[in-house]
Length: 122
Image (cartoon, rainbow, N blue to C red; front, side, top):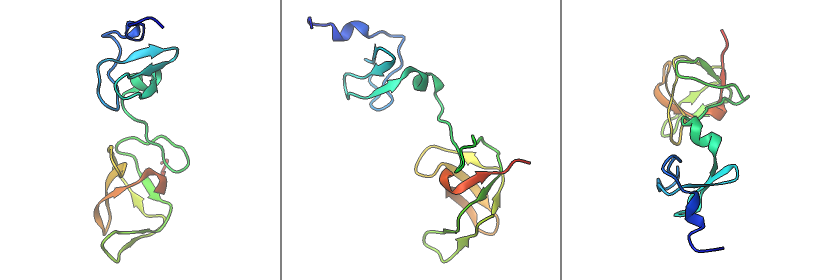
């Protein structure tokens, strides 16, 4: 490999690395690569931008959807339990440890993970 061949594929039109934000990403076949941290990702993922959230059975969730809890959930730091079948409306999707911010009746503001809810189709 001749010197500088690695850097020839880099252009200003490619998105920065999602892991380390390095602007020096380059394309190798169908993948984008980062020389700074070694992270590789697909071009489709780079174009999509926002993550797609799915419930426990694979339905795509959106802000404002109504979901039901599929498992008894203990509230951390409390003796309260959110029962199976509890309906939560007007969810808000967020990035982080818990994917859903919502207000649960008789409990209050809560963060839920998408793997513990199922979308309600009305």
